Each structure stands twice: as structure tokens, then as C-alpha cells.
Amino acid sequence: MRLNKFLAAAGLGSRRNVEDLIRGGVVRINGQVVTNLATQVAPTDAVKVGGKLLRPERIIHAVLNKPRGYLCTANDPEERKTIFSLLPFDWPRVHYVGRLDKDSEGLLIITNDGDLTNVLTHPRHEVEKEYEVWLDKPFDIAAHREKLLRGFRIEPGFAKCEAIESVRREKLRVVLRQGLKRQIRLMFYELGYEVERLVRVRIGPIVTGEIAPGTWRLLTQKEVANLREGSQPKADANS
Image 1 (tube, rainbow, N blue to C red):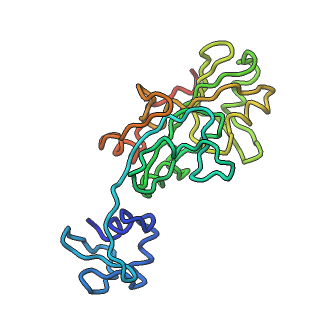
Image 2: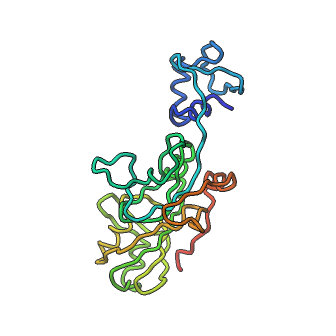
Image 3: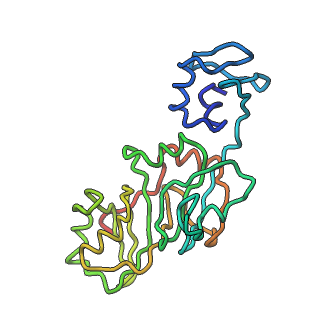
């Protein structure tokens, strides 16, 4: 295993962040200072940073189906329910990717893999996220669909939808490649609608499937590889 990957797996940050530690000469392998980023770590090697012997943490790649009413935070001063109460206590420290607000539901990627997090959050990767959206009144396709696809400015920035499909008069399927805060709720609010329910049903190639609300499952190696590659079904923007 490359040294930067080993340090990241030991909880010292992403592979890019730990490269500064290596260049700074604070990493020792078997007592010797190592500054070469390409150094390989064998299972029998003793790796220390600042005198502390490191052990790589277990890497977690999971998907959680967040129920309504849970917060995406590790600590809440008001002691409200958080998504971390739904995860095993014996896991290493993990974080969520793809925040959902308290009243929203659906898929969250749970991981401690900094490289995967970067792929899923960096704008250049444009990972698709698909939602089921219930509105407070029938959606006016003729008046508003094209505006949502072209995009317009909301408080967090310029926002647009990649695809919109009408399921019923008040229910839509919406695909995004952005991750602006409360993007869907704010876009529809600008057009005169209130979002009554919002459920994320897909992140890239990962779909809800049989994951019940409040439960999680580990991702397969193939699913993780597909997420890294940005593999996803191609939505039809004209649907």
C-alpha cells in the first residue's frame, strides 16, 4: 500500500492532505524518516507520525436510507435525532456525502474514504442525483419545465436541473448534477410551489432498492469502483 493511502486509512486526512506530512519529514517507517510519496508500506512495517504508531482504520463504504426527521450532523446541541445514531457503534469515524436537510429523505453515502468523497463532491465529476418530489399543487409543465432545465439564480448560486419527469400531477422525478444547499426546495419555491416531500432515490449508479428507511448496507467493490468512475445511468433531459 502506498504511504499516503496508508496514512489516510489511519485517519490522518485525505491522501492529498497527508502528502504535506510526508514532505514535512514527520513520517517514519521502521525508524527512518520517509519523504518519498511513492514509498510502499508492507504489512510488517512500523509507521509512526510524531512518535505515534499508526494502524490503518477499516475503510467503510456504505449507503444509508435517511428517514425524515433526522439531522445530518455528528452532534446536535438540542439532542435531536441524527443519522449517526442509525450506524454501528463499532465503526471508525465516518462522514456523510450528499447532505439532506431534516425534512428530506433518501440516500446518503457514508464513508471514511477521502478520495471517494472528493470524487462525489467535486463539481468536475458531476455525479447525478435523482429525487422524487411531491409538490403542494399540480406542476405546470408548459410554464416551468424549461426554466428549471435552463437554470436560474437562487440564494446559494446558479441552479439548474438536468432532467425532469412528471410522474403524477403533483409528483416529479428530478435529476441534479449540482449540490447547492436546499436546491430543489428553493428552485420550486421561486416558481410558486412548496415541496411537501423530497426523497433522494439515486446517487450515480446507487439506487434505493430494498434499503428500508433508517437502515444501511455496505457497498460492493464494484459499486465503489463505479462511483469512482462516475458511472451512472444517462437521464434523458427531454423526458
